[in-house]
Length: 206
Image (cartoon, rainbow, N blue to C red; front, top):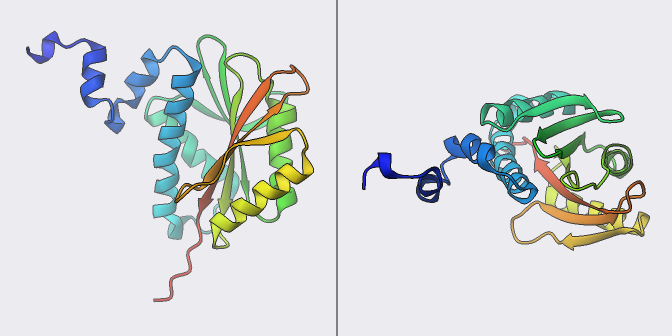
C-alpha cells in the first residue's frame, strides 16, 4: 500500500502525534472533547516554550505573554484570538463550528486575590457552560519559584472561598495543573476549568 492509498484517518493514526499535524487534526475534529484535548495538548508544548525562553521574557506582562500563546496556537492551525469581547475582554478565545467556544484567562501571579479575580471573570463573566462552551483555563504566569506550592495554595484557597467549586482532578506528580468544576449561575450547567501554572522564575546561581 502506498501513501496515496492512505485515508486521512489512517495517516493520522500513523503520524498523528506529529506537532505539524495539529492543524489537520483540528480541522477534522467535530466534537468538543477532541477540540479541548487538542488545545490542552498544544498549550502544554507552548507553555514549555515560554519556560525554555524565560530569561528573555522576565519583564513581559500577561498581555504580551498571552499574545505569544495566541500566535503559537494560530500558527499551528488552532485559531486563537486575544482580547475578544465575550461580555468583557477575555484574554484568549478559541471558536470553531458547531457553537464551540473555549476561554482562557491569564494572570501574572502577584497575590491570590488577583488569581481569584481571574477565576471570577472566567466563570461569571465569560463562561456560560452551554453545550460546546463549557471549558476554560486559568493561566497563571509565576516568577517567584516553587510554583507547585503556589498552585497547591491557590487550589486550597479557591475551594475554601467558593463552596460551589469541586476539584475534579488534583495536582499529580510533575503536572502543574488541577481541574475544577462548578455550576454556572447563568445556565445552571457545569463549567470545567483547568488551572495551569507556568513557572517562569529565572534566578541562576551561576
